[in-house]
Length: 87
Image (cartoon, rainbow, N blue to C red; front, side, top):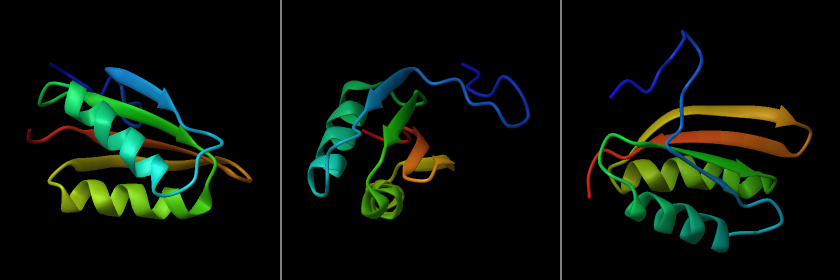
């Protein structure tokens, strides 16, 4: 499976929008989404909580997943791409 369709473009297998949620709910939702996926698939997370923009990538890597990209798309909005590396 090829996730990257262009130099900077990542093709997600699943997308969740967790805008309006705060920690720890942001990580819980992201972790549950990753658990539903197959190894190698990519999750796109849209969020608006600044703390989660830093905490989700760090926590995902601590749990053995790969952070592909963290993009700030607005004053208080981010998109994070996570590739599931292990169950």
